[in-house]
Length: 311
Image (tube, rainbow, N blue to C red; front, side, top):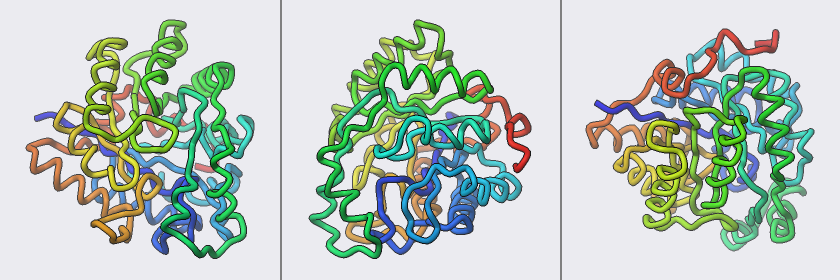
């Protein structure tokens, strides 16, 4: 029976706290959410940090140190730390937690792009904190920078400490960029390709977009040199995860990517989304990968080889 890796993105930089009361923002809330997602079946937990007072995205390692030890001690999930942070951050800011904690895996975006969020203002009108409205409103003028020099810097600095990567590809060109760095020897297989659909500025969320990305990845990497996963943003989360599983892929869910549980109903936890996709996967006669399965499939260094003493 084929095993499917569930990644859960617990709390990211996109959704603001005012959009959902269930979005974790304090260290305890983030730890509880990650542990709950792991107990529900997530093999990997993808982690950002937030200012606990305002919910604003932060790459301060001191904030990560307030939830990483609990997660590591209370569940066996693979810890995946963002190097994306937020589009408003410098590459040096974005790298701080990954360089400090030397995780088994870190996310890495494969290209500069428009990352447009202002359409959320059509659905959400009131906010608790001063940063939230302008964060969304001014996204039409921001470029999420990931130059080739930036990508190489992250690959070398994190790769030298044994961290592998969740390679985030928001469009077809990003697959070609990943292949370029593979050809240069900076990425080695199995490459964990997280293909992202439904973000304004990236590829759409039609099922033909998913199939095209899969065909392109097969052609560039060969079926044995990469592990494929799908992230569908917003309402696309469950439909595209199901398509990915049916096509032989893995899945990513979580409140970073979608706030929704049922139509027009907010998900009350990350674990709720993990449980929902687990039910779908098991109905397809697929087995849920354990953290140890994920470590083997992705050839990770293991949880005992992370670098920060605070873990």
